[in-house]
Length: 196
Image 1 (cartoon, rainbow, N blue to C red):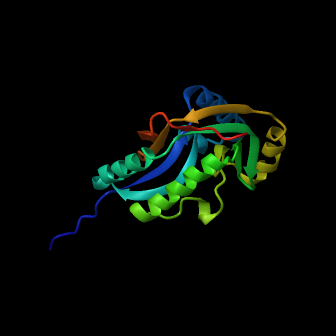
Image 2 (cartoon, rainbow, N blue to C red):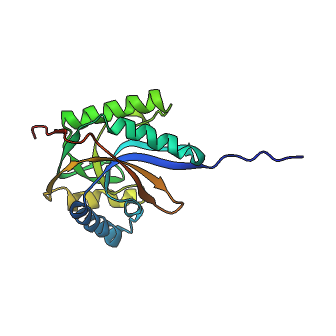
Image 3 (cartoon, helix red, strand yellow):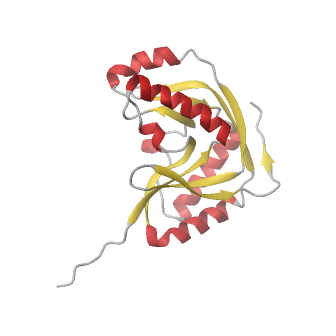
């Protein structure tokens, strides 16, 4: 009797990855949560803004996924991103807030529609809720009992940063952590900057 082999399905998600200087700043905040509360989950991916939640895809068809996202990205202008202060999703998530500009919302909306129609992917946001752009500092391994104290110690701090995203990123899970695996450049020479 022949056993049927199941094609390998890997985990991926789509995001804007922060540039190196901002990554270093965010990682220092994530290190604070590791040292103070033992939270390491946020350190298992490069600092990023999720545009499409994790999904499974056949590894043998990765090229189709990459080519489709390259096609999408080539039609999009670069987008200005502003990080400002902090926010939370009780009872576990603390993050750097991302200003929700019309340009960022448009990118998310168009990417969600593209993924749904061209790639048959749904669930671009957490539990199909509203798009809430952020950069995670602590989440699933922040104990509920520690959340209130952690948020009280962090919420009053101020933080500002900005960058222009010139690439869409596909991140891939390697079994231990997420890696910024492929980037797809946005349309050359096009740049939208929202009023912030």
